Image (cartoon, rainbow, N blue to C red; front, side, top):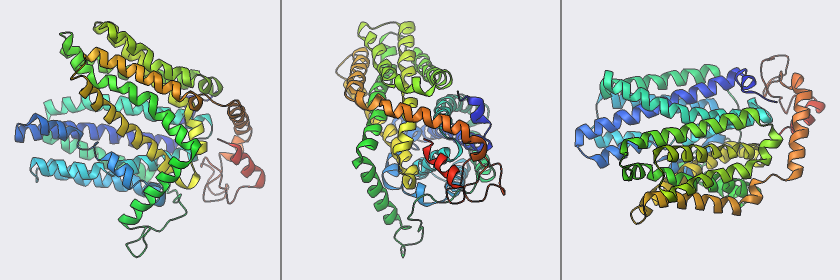
Length: 459
């Protein structure tokens, strides 16, 4: 069975994951420092709150309009370019050249490009990791995403106390430079993935802004029209985005218990539940069992939330939230099927659409839960979120449950991957195997017929 140690043995994966961790930590520190600066400059709690989410709100816009660039530009160029852009923005913020609203505008504009970088990063993973390795690799990104946001908040608070917001912004900018260096020297210069590779000024519409928007919409429509892809997207989104609505009213729930400060504990336990679920399901369940349990893990998202009808105390509420968040690991059973359904030429955009939809729908659900809490008690809203998640799981059960033939194919692919891996793992995507023995995937154009056949059978 594949282990996390095998995943970390791939040097390029470590560079991708390390750059991602640096990016998340730096962004969390930056947004926290920016919120403090904006509040100090304006005295407005609303503007301070908007400043804290200014880098996240435009990601839905960028994911809707520009995702096609993830497949039409070289992945390393996208990663390094985005880090350098964040570095420039970080220097402008730290230097204090702009008023508060100007600072928020800079963060808003750079945040819109985040989905492109994330899609390019994710699209490289199947070239490095095959079969169940890819599933565990994706789970590590989820683990790091949750962990680094917590770490970033803690580091940001410490830096604010020691260096002040300006010093925190300078250190956040330094993390951008470190991430750019890690991507430049740790990630290979993979070729563009899409057949439409023209990235030129307006004379070549493929590279113009309007051309990128049209291509993004065209491919998004193509992906959503595909029944299999649409079903998998809904299976990823439905159960979890509805459950997350409960987290949106944790603060008023804790306040209603007379323990407003406990809201941080409740959210921390939920994050811990998600981390624990990802690790246990990814590490100890074999691929066949993981896929069989996918719908049942999705059920776990909603059931614990029903206890909030009884308005439990902090301890029971924390346990319920932790158990519900552990159910988020159900997505690991969908990862292989999603990769198989994603068109090779548009793999980056497919993953970008998945991530953008998840982020957008979670934000809308949390906002809706907050609005519902204006007329219902927060505990009842959390229970409603659980019921909604269970209904979504029931409706999507056929999409969540694996087809038997799909499981058999997965097992056969794992067996073939194990048999052929010594020869495949030494081939290059762009060169003959003799020239770069350290590369981990076989070149379709230069591998032998036997190896190409084996590669096609891998998930």
